[in-house]
Length: 387
Ligand SMILES: Cc1ncc(COP(=O)(O)O)c(C=O)c1O
Image (cartoon, rainbow, N blue to C red):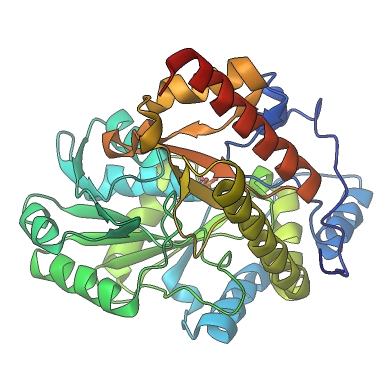
């Protein structure tokens, strides 16, 4: 492991902190929900301590400095130009998408998503009494690509598409050409394109994601919560150049009470974007090393499982088709047998049923423990099933 300025090696006991990952269930090795087992950047911790020193925690406004920190980050890193008047604050990407579904589509409408995809996209559509329309990604030779003919046909049936850019759980960075084509098809069919870019900073070192072009039918959701491990502060923004759309969204988020700000979130977000870039760059190196550890481990110790090349996110998509076992059964077996919790691929759509998703954002020691449990679990399953 390369020496790092920041501490990505210490194992932090997160039990009894009301952590969804560590306290919701009692698995020994939770590698499912998308948060990281690393300490946040020191600048974020300092900013929170400083704010907490002030003894009053009343209602808070969203300062211009917060929006400016987003504007500067995307301009500097991704050449994506935003203006304050095109942005709205939200208490999270999914709450904002939920509000957008309510104000931009009608009950009973279909909404298009590209599966396998982040499971909460299904929930947010169905719980708002809309229907999921799947543009299933084509899986061939260990790689995914978009079925554009199917997309073209299905976009004619919907008012809204939700894009995951980069894509959770397959770890893919969509190319400029792919994005241009998606945007062109959405324009052709008068479809509002919501681009969820929450994983955008977590690319492999030396690579960058491509933001969706900010055209009139595009709404972009941005947040530091994955990149800086501050999901617990619940903070994000919505961006669109279309004033009419933005006004509708703001008004719906107001009705839904999803536009108010947590007193600590402001400090955390500003410290993340303004003072923690060097931490993020080191984190990306560590995540990349973890990916290499998994790659080598699977190749040498567990070749029955195939790793899908991961360009972004810290979520690895493992092809377990050779095991001939439904992903829910497999996931449950690993939990019972090894205390290892990996997400079942079917949670991300029926087409994900041959897969498991593994969160590798943890110190190397935990990662290796998880991998050993995976191997032991597969051996135990093999003894039972004789596959
Ligand atoms: C693609 C994607 N969007 C949104 C979220 C959640 O965002 P928030 O906590 O801001 O609602 C996640 C969390 O894993 C995610 O993977």
